Length: 278
Ligand SMILES: NC(=O)c1ccc[n+]([C@@H]2O[C@H](COP(=O)([O-])OP(=O)(O)OC[C@H]3O[C@@H](n4cnc5c(N)ncnc54)[C@H](OP(=O)(O)O)[C@@H]3O)[C@@H](O)[C@H]2O)c1
Image (cartoon, rainbow, N blue to C red; front, side, top):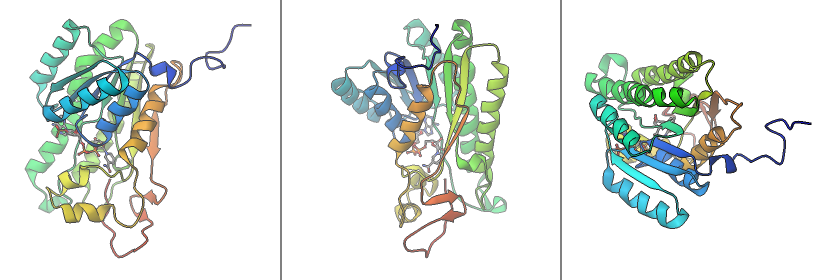
């Protein structure tokens, strides 16, 4: 009898990542950096991108020493379309094109009513979270189509499912990520390429410090009195999605901390503060 692809003793989710090449945007901090570590523990080779190249170099040295995997790092602003195209051309010429693309680079700026919002903040969010993801996907997907294999994993948010007060443009950017994940999946029907989104709730990273422009006290408040997700928790889910058998596409995964049931329902041990954030 021919075994079904998911029958034991086939490779498990970890083993399927062995020797895969994984490109991660926004790998200098938070979820992206944790992804680099989790994928390295499973034997994947890495291409790590972010603007803070010094941080990427330290991470590369650590991962190479610790796990013996191949790690390449490049300084890149995903908003720079020419820079993205040039980098992908370089990856192609050096045989470093990824099997798995993780579109993680993203940010939120401010938490203001729309009529008081800063246009520069809107542009930064849309240029990074939406256009940066598009530039990366447009540059890399043709190679995946040519090989008829690959996996794009977009990091969305619960902000892409439910709009919360003063989230406006950040919410819109993450709704766009969800729509683009769906659109890419539809457009790639008939290929073996999968497109997934992993959509977390509150994760303790540099995210709130960036949102509140270095107001560390306000950022710390976001994570006070409950247990948020760690970036490792999210990276672990992303690696699970990536390690599914090739005929399985885990299209959309929403991950909350147990203490958070929606952007509006958060259990804090001292419930005197209720700022939403994802
Ligand atoms: N933390 C949360 O609660 C949460 C919840 C749901 C979804 N998310 C999403 O998770 C993703 C990662 O966020 P995080 O929480 O890990 O935040 P983080 O700790 O601030 O990390 C953000 C990463 O994105 C990179 N980045 C930002 N702008 C970039 C640009 N223009 N070009 C290249 N890289 C850029 C940063 O690197 P450089 O500054 O070095 O370029 C950094 O590595 C984002 O898409 C975010 O929207 C976060």
